[in-house]
Image 1: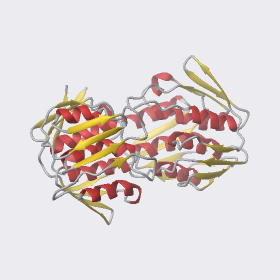
Image 2 (image 1 turned 180 degrees about the horizontal axis):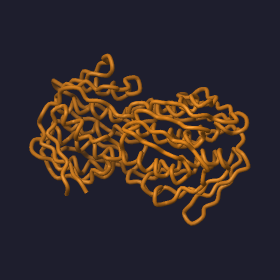
Image 3 (image 1 turned 180 degrees about the vertical axis):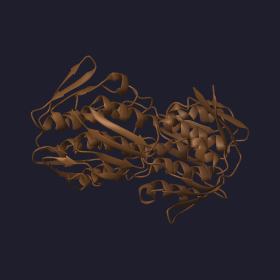
Image 4 (image 1 turned 60 degrees about the horizontal axis):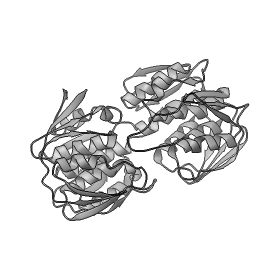
Amino acid sequence: MDKLVIEGGVPLEGVISVSGSKNAALPILFASILVDGTATFRNVPRLRDIDTTLDLLGRLGCACRREDDHVSVTPGELLPEAPYDLVRTMRASVLCLGPLLARIGRARVALPGGCAIGARPVDQHLKALELMGATFELEEGYIVGECEGLAGARITFDMPTVGGTENLLMAASLAEGETILENAAREPEVVDLADFLIACGAQIEGHGTGVIRIQGVPALYGADYAVMPDRIEAGTFLVAAGITGGDLIVEGCPYAELEAVILKLRDMGMEVEPEPGGVRARGRGRLSCVDVKTQPYPGFPTDMQAQIMALMCVAEGAGVVEESIFENRFMHVQELMRMGASIRVSGHTAMVRGGAALTGAPVMASDLRASASLVLAGLAAQGVTEVRRIYHLDRGYERIEDKLGAVGARIRREAE
């Protein structure tokens, strides 16, 4: 297992680029199950979860090729089973359920394993697919689904669910008749999936709103498609400029999709402005704490909660961070406190008292975003920080040490 060793206290300056979005790429890759022919993708990030997805697609009967950030997928004779040895490492594997039912009428998908940041059940996926004509049984830890062709339906989600919306978008694209998804997730990654399906011949309207209409078509065909930039990686780099008092141009930063984050950073005192091809972020001067509540898009994203908390630790004043999406998503707090942060947690709320002089320490990452927040804290701390269990980062950021090192960070990877 590797760790990151960070010598903090250096303002980051220069140009840093944003990778393709993992959270967009995963459902789009699974959507290739639906197409006749070859789907070709550009801007696919080089991450562990992407490799797992390509392995799973291969097991399902798709021929996959990869060269740098280009991937091609050609479905062959499809098989219905997504085995536990792959699904257990990546919750997004359940996104093959809708495409398999739509394409071959059966699926046997291992239930996703537990998650460090809390339960993320798939019951809304199953209820919605049942309304379209699928039936399900649970057999030895596997979801076994069958249907004699899916039919359009009006589906109202109990709450906005990104994975559920994505699974149903894919299934409904080949269903007979019209499907209406109400209380649908509005995240940009959902929009990116819909845009890919439309490029393949799907008839979809309303993506990006709470009501999506899908008119099923007999077949979808391959397309060439570029995956959107990763808005969470981009947001992390914006915070890196602020926490180090630096000046970064973040190339490929999706400005509109990060509006809620950018508004909070400006409220804290950062300068964040769009530039041709990206966004310039400057953190020079005093920053102030703010109050933050995570919400579904277009609200403040839960995946940026840990990063902005790290920034608040070194800002002036006090602020409240309320986590309304996931339970158990304050596990980075104890590690930040080991570095000198002043944080008090009560239920789903954390009170941050800023102005801390962070000092380097050995810290343990519990999940992907916690890893990112500890790296950010290490960049601002005096002394040496060791961030352990960084395999989380390899699932969500393309060699973050290389990107940060190119703009001045003293950061290196070592074996533990």
